[in-house]
Image (cartoon, rainbow, N blue to C red; front, side, top):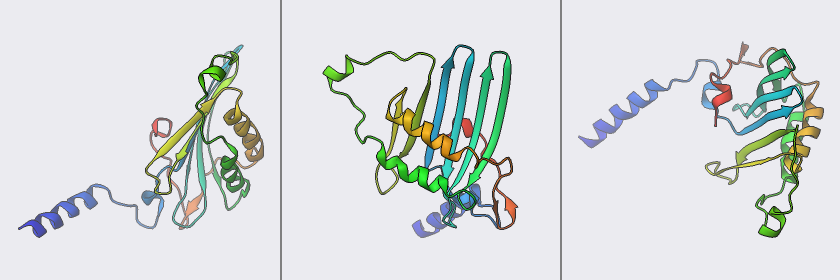
Length: 181
């Protein structure tokens, strides 16, 4: 009786989470997440970038960004496909330059300076080969902030309004992009 229950349970599970026909987009998950929040003096940024890797080996970044400058609000939703922008792979490789241990000893933690009118940048990604353990590094004016400033400059011309295509069909936007882990 147990094998029958396992087959039925597996079938129900697979039916509940179908992959889209002709697309490997349904079988990938966020690998990296980069956020930027904050600002000051009338300029505020709220940005989320999710980087995934479809089964075809390329990297795909999807960005939702809201800029508020005084009373003007600008919302952008755009994409990068590493096939058209090799800089994306280089930016991801440069994650290796970030400190592995971001915890300060008590003597260094008490000597920190306050930073106002800047954004907080966070990057979340795998901390182990199995991908199950994730780590988030976050700072204002530190190495994560510096890494993102140079990365953002390298990727500036790569952002495109149209999503990349898989098997000739555009990748669908991830619902709740801003709320992904």
